Image (cartoon, rainbow, N blue to C red; front, side, top):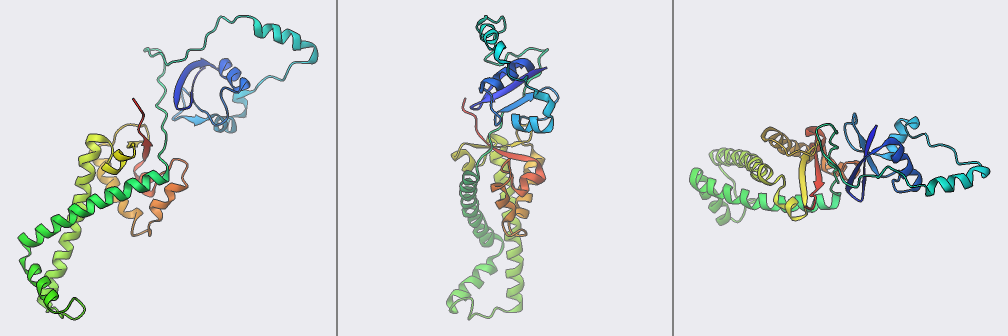
Length: 262
């Protein structure tokens, strides 16, 4: 049984099971270290593997007092095995998945508001252009409201109310369409929106691969559920999830991770 393990974000291995036990005994690999072997669907902490299968790492008892000297001599005996420090790829060895370092809630929040500001500014510009080109009545109504002392004192006619409601509906649809296009432009090219690029984050699937067209659209629409319908709780749960996932990430099986330095 060959194991891979991670120390300080560096993937090491493979090593035999016995060597991993020796590393555990020496303190090189601790309970919080991530480990993986063929047959596991993802990296897990050593403590989690021990909890799920206590017999997996059944360490031998310490030597008796009379055996201590023999143990010291054995430790000084040169071993023919040398632990490989880097992953050696060939067709016969399983390839361990990349270690994913999940983005903290603070970075995600800051990146979200940067994206929100960019999206909102361009959305307002597009809405103004749409009003000027396709709804000239709205411009006139707006001017009448301003001249009449504000929205509270102005009484629009039923026809004007119909035009305003129709325009508002089109503006909302424009906002949704622009949000989808915004995500597609950046996620298909960079796997990150402008805010995430600024903070060194990437948006990936559970297997650390980029998102496709359909999943990007689904996640964009799912962000709407994380906002107004849940009063923002869908975003807030990312602060407490072990993989820092919001409701939209859970629904679309996505992760926001730190970009690995080349």
